[in-house]
Image (cartoon, rainbow, N blue to C red; front, top):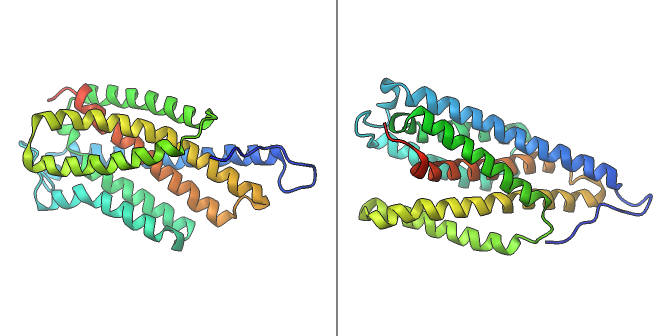
Length: 249
């Protein structure tokens, strides 16, 4: 990662104070968008997961096995992420933000079953642990001078392998693999939290040094994409930790 200095000669490009202020505002927007998406997900998941009538639309309330619509909802977030990545540069900022919140709502539907499977106390405590870990890792990614780009390549390769392992284990039902997947998942998304935070910061500094902050449209889309990446890191880390910390109903 290039070491972008925030000190520039007077009269050249954008001043250090302006860049620093812009970076803080950009990061606050990223975390703000992510927080709203988390609230949307939590609201939808709780509303559906605590209602047998609503949950039965997607899963058997007793066995929690998904029906056809449940399988669709389970894989819909993955499809939406790929679609968003392909279309975001063609969207207005308002449209991209709406899509992000719609994605968060669908994610809520896909994980609503946890309110039936785990106790409320264990869900809350796992969320708190995840929040503390996420904040620490994101802060590390923001302040570290170490280049994490190489680690990002390794983590993305690990993520692909993790997804493949999860799909394979749907058919194999291996207890060993079922234990290993959450462990590996927590490590991967912990690393991605730091990596994605550094990437968001680095991209902003790179475009800000062009003298125009990269353009309002670009920065708006960039903030949403950054929020989406960190949101996915948090949600996945939470779900994998729930396998260890959650108490079954």
